[in-house]
Image 1 (cartoon, rainbow, N blue to C red):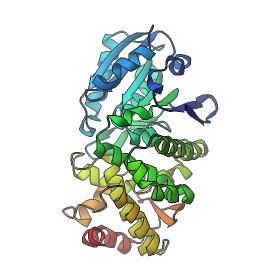
Image 2: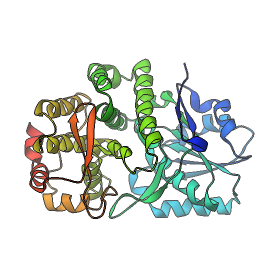
Image 3: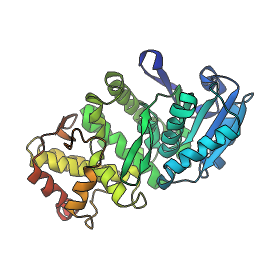
Image 4: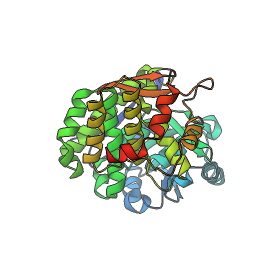
Length: 364
């Protein structure tokens, strides 16, 4: 059964369609195409699996396809420029619609291209990873990485719609799938203790990819994110809570050249570190931090920070994060499961202790 969540942003509002087989349903795409010209942006892993189904749904449109190599290391200005060159060579114009068929890398790059090609064209997100369906495809954050930091170049630009097909998880590698569960759990930590409880109880069904369990996990995650984005589209306040664990996680990704950890894996480690810091500054009880770590472990996610990264190296990398404001590091700390705060008042000694706590966090 198809489910729908709406993101309410006045003239930028859009639907999220959730359900098995949705990416091949033409009626979900047709209202959101600007004209007859369409460019599908995908990667060399996803395109062989789902491009034909998507082209069937886009039947009648004049479709060009651009395929990127797969991997976070290709989320760069060079890839952005290659797509721009392709669109110009194929004579696309302001009435074109871009369709992102892939995970977060494809969605973020395509959205950034859409935001800037001829000063903005329509685009549709067709996320093919769990992480993208519950996080990166929703909310309008687009961009590419820079060697100094993740997502340092980009724009806020909302899609016309999101098509979240749960059938794609059947071909998603297990590691990629589990990485998406980190973002699902994050929503429980930041906003919904009942959802956290549900994930804790439903862990085996989630790992087994039970269809009904998955649809609910995606739907509830999208509902929570939509609510936050509606209140703070451009992250001037409340939206920052979505970054729980991400400042630590982004630093880990950057320092390991995006080759050691998947984004969700780095976020899982980052959430453990953020919970540890929350305990050290007195905002979170130790039992809640231990519970967060325990549930992450039950979902087969890494919780151990890379001990080869020194506290100085991590601190410098965190200082390059987009969430630094006027030179001050801004972190999301937990107060309890279901409620977090955003603060720039961070005890330096407590932060250093967390950055040096790798062995303890690995063993504890």
